[in-house]
Image (cartoon, rainbow, N blue to C red; front, side, top):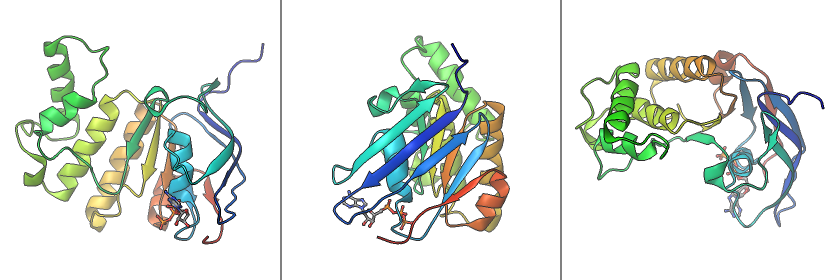
Length: 217
Ligand SMILES: Nc1ncnc2c1ncn2[C@@H]1O[C@H](COP(=O)(O)OP(=O)(O)OP(=O)(O)O)[C@@H](O)[C@H]1O
């Protein structure tokens, strides 16, 4: 039997809605590398991420296969795919502390309270947020929130990352810092990444293949 292809493989993906939208996507995202998806507003970039993550809106029908390290995950529920998500908004739970947000993301395989807290504290240290555990998200700066969101995503032990304009709310210096952090973490953890962005600087920093999709629906 042939060895499984590592990384994320997208095969013959097509997505349609009543507006006769159609994408034909074939791509291989090697571990630790970034596939950047660009295209005009409304061309279907977020929709593509929804298909990869298993949360495609009901208005769409889709075909094609998604594989991670050779495993076909196309029919799996979102929580079983191993997708780590980062969006434009950090989407932290406002009623929980930073530590609470991180603990919530940890998979149940990390069992004891001590092990869970140690993992969360280590993630905070790695994101240069030591001591931020008791704070609430609304007391953080945008850049700090973005780092908590990244820590939370990584703690969920994803097999690949889906990023939807994750840097666009940050100002230029923070954006550069955040993208370096995300890409270096992905590389360190050998995670394939699909990045949706409008920003050419993101694409350049990602230093990987770029696909440009469609015209606006
Ligand atoms: N839940 C939905 N139901 C019906 N149509 C939708 C739904 N979500 C998105 N669409 C439509 O599908 C098309 C693609 O939307 P999508 O959000 O994927 O675009 P995008 O390329 O990510 O745009 P942007 O750059 O503005 O975020 C748009 O025409 C949009 O109006």
